[in-house]
Each structure stands twice: as structure tokens, then as C-alpha cells.
Image (cartoon, rainbow, N blue to C red; front, side, top):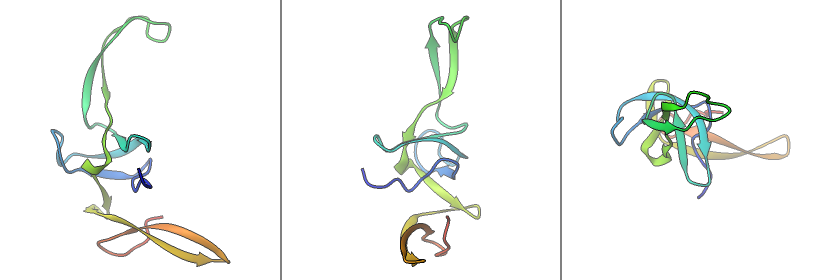
Length: 107
């Protein structure tokens, strides 16, 4: 897959699926599979066996990854697509993320 446009720490809105219109912070990005884990979104229950880390075991709820195409970056509270802008700074080529709706540099 090409470069991930969503990064860890971004605030995103879910645009498809059972948790549509929910917003949250990106906890983890998996570039190889093209998936992201969003805080408080796509909660699943998992049955855990007792282990050294989890002595009790039982049923645990956690966030599951969802595909990056199902989330949209929030810029100033509004969902926007992300593009890239390549510029020259101090003789070095720099690639920056840009909000498509406003043209502002994100980082």
C-alpha cells in the first residue's frame, strides 16, 4: 500500500460501518494492512484465557482495527481529504500533509 495519510494521534471521523459518525483519536496505525485503531470505535469483545499478564481471564472489550478508507481526517472540526505538498526548505526536499478543503499545511 502507498503512504498512509492518517498518522498516530490524528483526530478522525468514521465515515462507514456500524460506528459511522463517531470521532476519536488514532491510537495505532498498521501500514502493511492499511488499518487504523481509533479510540472508542469498533469495540469488540474478546474471550481471554488466564495467563501471566491476565491472571483472571474472562471477557475483555477492546478496540479492533478498521480500514483506513473508512475514516476521514478532521481539520478544524470538519472532515477533509489529505494531500501531499513537496517543497524545498534549506536545500532539502520536504513532504508535508495538506488539507484538501482549505489548502492549509497539517504538519
